[in-house]
Image (cartoon, rainbow, N blue to C red; front, side, top):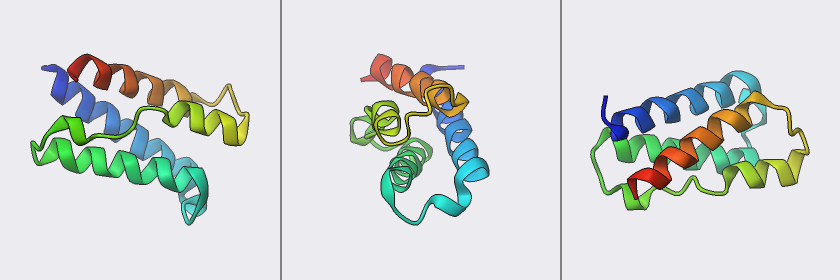
Length: 89
């Protein structure tokens, strides 16, 4: 599997975790921002648009600054996605 497809799958993992764990908290705040950025990234990857338009970098830090839940597995998945994106751009 190529790097772009791997990133697409990782983005889906993050989106699924956010929807499953925080579905009722996506109306505002940093979670909404992170969620929107990941949904935009998914659209970019699925439509084979320019990956330079993906803006997920910094989501881990933003989450930690807002929630201080450093052990949340979502952070690990987001970190993987950010690293994958950095390899591609």
